[in-house]
Length: 385
Image 1 (tube, rainbow, N blue to C red):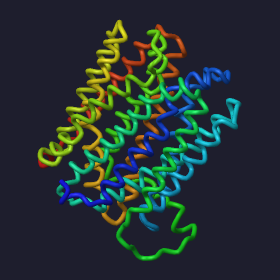
Image 2 (image 1 turned 120 degrees about the vertical axis):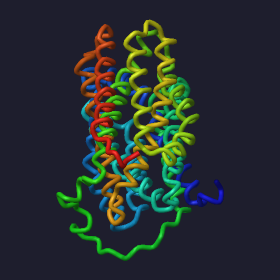
Image 3 (image 1 turned 90 degrees about the horizontal axis):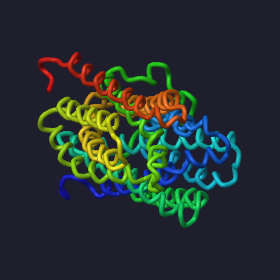
């Protein structure tokens, strides 16, 4: 593996891990935080505004990545994230907090687009599935570690401690980018034409299939992002990040294997397997009567994600126009952001802070999985794996 992947690849993976730790540290406590600010009915906007901003910025980050290099949107994204993290303690109203959530979303609209395009540039074509498996594994590790350690940091330093810790991890992640070199590219003038995307540069139709699956699975995840902290409280537990900690441990175990599997047998098989595991998660949660069963569903959630993520990333890279790889990746990420926001909104609309309606949220999740499996079956071509 050392001969296959460069030092830049591993530095970028570590950077991605730290960046995801940074902004995920604060997530488990934000439902309670906005409730303290008297914004209980606006819970879905915590992720909703964040993902909407990310979706808006994707076309810009994709064009910037294609014209000015992959590292440019990475720098923009991480710097915005650091500044917003340190600003949270000074905005003590619901409106001020939500404005910062919107601004924070721009960071994840820029950084992952540049980082994913850079990974696609520096790995061999025949190893994309494996490489994306490793890369997405570091994302999951960062996501899980941030969520898992959130409770411990909160108990010691309260919510402001979480905000400052988020900013510090962002600074460390930013420092690593200086050690990564990317291939030289022709110089492009900095003007509106090279920054503002045209209509045909916003969406890459060639990546429609992985984009649809990304939207459906992101919507599924968006449901859980909203209700997991509240379900944890419902069962009388303080460990709001435990669910995602278990999720992470399980997804790590299959990411590397699943990436190789996708290279050998095709992206579609991975996606079907992942969607089936997501369906199992929804069914478990529908019939769950205890915290233990609910946490056990995170095992299957992690396995399903382990199959889905590397296949979606690799398939998007396969289908993207080589000259406009940033646009293709940005399209996939737009589906991710819109899906999470949509899932959050649906969960809030169905749940309405009424614990008796948790099960209805999971029925919605099961429908999303069935739609994904139907889409995979209906779009299958005889010559395609």
